[in-house]
Image (tube, rainbow, N blue to C red):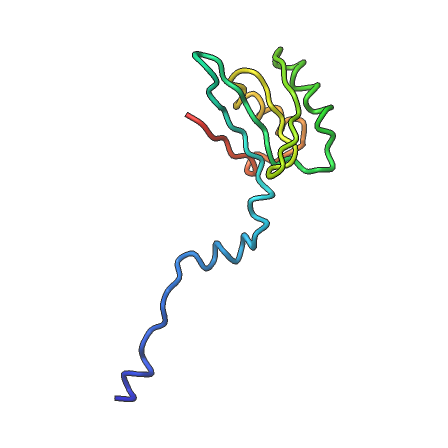
Length: 113
């Protein structure tokens, strides 16, 4: 009977590697670009997760000039500062952030629809 006790495999955790890599800081390194439907055909693009060392107002100013849309920086209690832009600007914002050297392409997550 002791022969069987020694060869019992332990429980396999398929998420052990993912949890070890994230260690709670995995969500902070991604920049999330989302689109929210307002009413009718109107939509809103939000950019969240940029590093705090960047000036959000300067990034917003360049985004507004580049894409000819209006926008604002909103202070959220849970998410911190979030950039909001009018219209569906997901692809435009992601290419802008990569070309400006603010974020690497693999650290951008695009959500919506």
